[in-house]
Amino acid sequence: MLEKIKTTNLQEGMYVVCSASGFISLPPELSNKTISSKTDISSILSLNIGEVLIDSEKSSIQESFPQVTYSEEILFAREAYNNALHCMQKIYKTIEAQGELQLTEYKKDISPLIDSIDRNNSAAASLTVLARTDRYLLTHSLNTAILSAILGRYMGLSREVIEEISIAAMLMNVGQLWISPNLLQKKGKLSKEEFHEIAMHPRKGSKYLLSQHIPDSIVKSVQSHHEKYDGSGYPEGLSGNDIPKFSRIISICDSYDAMTSERPYREALTPNAAIKHLYAMANSAFHPRYLESFIKCVGIYPVGCFVKLSDGRYGVVTNNTPKAPLLPQVKIVFNSRFRAIHPEFIDLSKQAEQAHKDNLEIVECIHPKTFKLELNRFLW
Image (tube, rainbow, N blue to C red):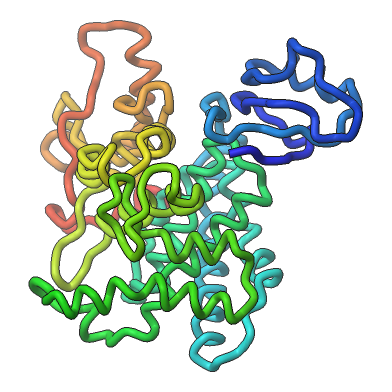
């Protein structure tokens, strides 16, 4: 996916194709290659080229480390999350009142949340697991928007595109407003007629958004977010590269958040178990490269996982290491007898580099309900 971005927004890991500024060309050594160092960025900036084209599918911002710590960012992320949730309420109230959607206003509302993701995406990511309410339709769409922004950033998409994907995710389920809540909350197997009615929500949503003169890229994303890579999805049975690129991102994040959410008809999975389910559906439900990028950027043990370590102690995952997804950073809060201890922070990836025989590793991911825990008190 080719995207035009300002050279001042270039990051290591982006795949630069060519100049997008008139007659000024990039030299061969800087074009059609992945930016591997700050020297490459400086060389491009020295050419006074305003914009370049990047290929987001070949980009991977694996060297983009947090600018601030989790503890420094979480309060800002929580405020931005709550403000974005108010934005979601505003959107749905506008739709119910048959008002006019204001995309420019909504982009301003979610901008602080995307700023937070830029500073430390682990803070916002943890809120998608921990900041649960009974307003599933709102929080699920917002959580999907956050995860889509995190994945888009990891893939090297521009800020403008990330904003658009986030808005698309926030609007993905507006079609459910015209479906009976009793049907959406039904326990047990759906009849063919009931499934067909629910499967119409992407069409209903996209039809409504068309009437609101929403950009075509967002409308297509809403209509296609339940399409599957192998063609088994709905409403049109699209497959492979025929599925819009935004939808490929949103569908992964939508599925992950749905799996980790408590529903009337099933319990929530642990983030680790949800990742395993997603991986099992690679090549069938999801674009393989996009799914691989998602797993790398959220980790095998996503932020907010409650885990047991090989020495018997328990902790909460606070950060991930894309190059070593099995070895995140953990805040240890209980000893092996499950008694509270003074918190200890351990970076499992750095410990592994020392190659000691007593290196710790994660042996189990546990649902917090097992011990009736509120994990947010350990992270905040």
